[in-house]
Image (tube, rainbow over all chains, first blue to last red):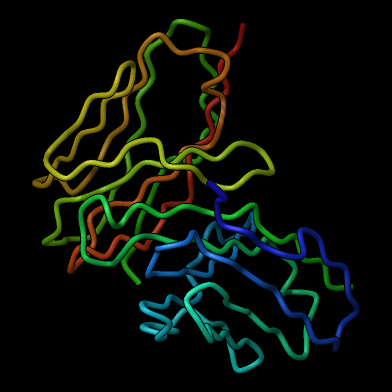
Length: 117
Length: 110
C-alpha cells in the first residue's frame, strides 16, 4: 500500500517566490496534518483537516501561509511570499480519524526539504 | 499550545544496555499517548501507541504516570538499530494527540 505521498521532495527557491507543497494522504484516511520541523523549534503542527475541513490553523505562522484540501486525496500548503526563515522540512501526515484510539495514529510522508535563499 | 518537554540527549549507551526516556506534559484528561522514532533525515514513524496506563512490546515498554504528568519509554537490550530520535506525543485534551515533544536522541554504540 502506498503511504503518504509528498511532492516535491526538495525545493530551493529565492526569497519572495511562491512555494507550493503537495500531499496525498493514505486512501481512506479522513484526517490530514501539516507539520514543520526545524532544529530550533522541533516538530510544529501548522494546520489539520478532518473530512477536508480545516479544524485548527492556529499553528500557521502568519498570513503568508495558507493550506487547502479540495478533496479527500489532495492537500496543498502554500507560502507566498517565502522568506529564508521558512527554510525547514515540511511533513504531511494522515490518520484514519480524530476520534481517538488506534484511529489517531499518524502516518507521515517523507517530507519536503525547503530552502529559501 | 501545551508544553511538552524531553531531555534532548544525546544518550550514548553500549549495545545491550537498558535506557529510559521521560516526557513531561501539562495536565490532561486523555489517557492515550504515543512514542514515535525518527531516523536521521527521515520522517517520524510510530513506535508504540498506548490507550491505558502502559504497554509492552518486545524490548520496549511505555508507561504513563498521570500523577507526576510524564510518560516514559524503556528500551531493554538496546541494539545498534535503536539509534534514532524518540519523539513523545503525550496525552492531550479531548483525545487529540497532536503535540510532539522535541525529541531525545539515542546513540547505541558497539
